Length: 141
Image (cartoon, rainbow, N blue to C red; front, side, top):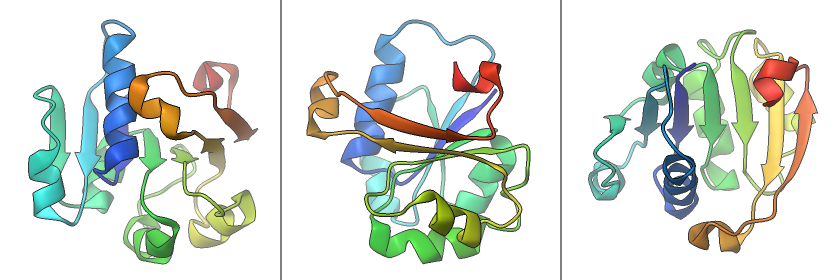
């Protein structure tokens, strides 16, 4: 089950660092996309596959984290909506962007997770609250 992050900023870096420190990941590739080539260049994890297109990332991944600033939500929705299908799990860490907004922006998607991490994620010590919509037990784990 490939894992992708749209947005190559500080929170994306913290998530990848946390995933990597939790041990080996079998049968899973990690992708990151950002429309800013400089942000992608700075994303210096050698095991992460970098893409310039969020739509391409959506095609490659089943788990997709939206790690962009809320002001960019509509732009990201417009790009990925055609490929954000019912089998994809859309995980949003965008502050203030609730499940109704995610459903409206990505009408073909059916599985959503809204997570509110905090700044301690940068040190691997974040306490997160999550809300799940239509996920299987395996997907929640």
